[in-house]
Image 1 (spheres, one colour):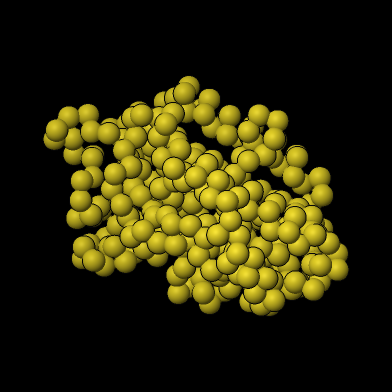
Image 2 (cartoon, rainbow, N blue to C red; image 1 turned 45 degrees about the vertical axis):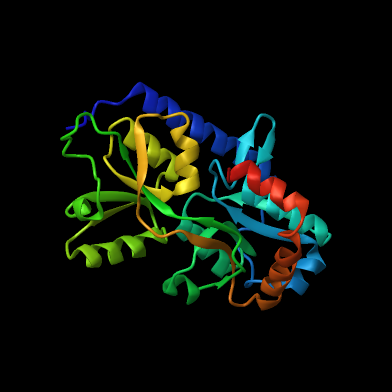
Amino acid sequence: MPTKTPNFKRLKYLAVALAGSLIATFILQREEAPASLPAPRDYPDIVAEGILRVALEYNAISLHVDGDSLSGFDYELVEAFAKAHGLKATIVPEMSFEQRLQGLAAGRYDLIANGILATSTLKDSLLLTTPIALTKEVLVQRKPSSPDDSLFVRTHLSLARRTLHVVKGSPSILRIRHLGDEIADTIYIKEVEKYGPEQLIAMVAHGDIDYAVCNEQIARSAADNMPQIDISTDISFTQFYSWGVSKKSPVLLDSLNAWFKDFKQSKEYQEIYRKYFK
């Protein structure tokens, strides 16, 4: 059984992640949108103001502080789109997927620029752009301590009666439920509101929880610094991910899709892609 005593390494990791998040919040929210806006905007309204309001999760792939500057796959794409359209992007780091959806519906954000896996539930609540990149959800667990380590999950059938931790509102929840139906047994889901995927991975690595589910690219990035974790068990098939806009923003969707169609053929896109998806 994992110890419940606070682990210095875990606390240090969480402190660093929190510090980075606070730095990003300070840098990015100086020009944050007003707390309440009348309604979701479409592209003509965005152009009229000259500002595109974007919600991003703070993690190693989408958005993070790199030295004294900001970096991230989705962040760089947002900046490229804004520049091409004469707009200024106001980026708001938001760790909660649920809060990002609520902010989009309330008009606080024009765009959720994180990797969103298309599900029937999400398609009912927002419009998804053309696919941007490939990703999948993986199980994060500690490497086995012995050949017969009972905690180590080797097959989907072994997920029965286990508790998987996910970020609250994550699209992976639906996939886990479907997986439970496929193995004809219960897989327990614990939604965590306080932390993002990288913090959940750190908690797995240091024994505070046994399992988490998150994006493969984020897990691979974390694994470079936490060699004790295993991410070899897929939870979902490889899928394309997209960005999301309000259903009241069809012109913005068309503008994004038209831009992506050309930009994905460019050398700039290939360089950005290779930087984060090796």
